[in-house]
Length: 107
Image (cartoon, rainbow, N blue to C red):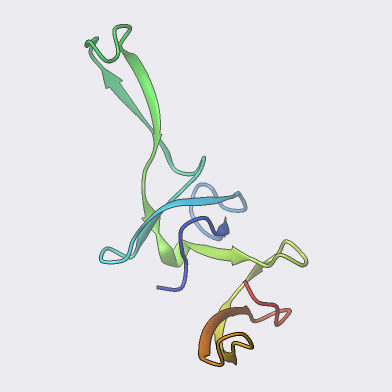
């Protein structure tokens, strides 16, 4: 899975199409991600000691990773991801980096 935590992504299909947000959590086994402010669900809660008021809470729920694309930092447009191997100058070791397909910039 190419999308990681704290990436800025745009939803490309579904009810929240066109909205952007930061990835809060990634579930690689299920191919799902939780994006900040996207796919909100309401949960009715009883009053308890931790939440004495009770009421209705809104919480993000996971969406499929195929419905989001990473946002290119240059032009703020959704972009596909590729990878490149570069040589680290300090250590002299090879390193895999994620690269935007539209601009060629590292993410």
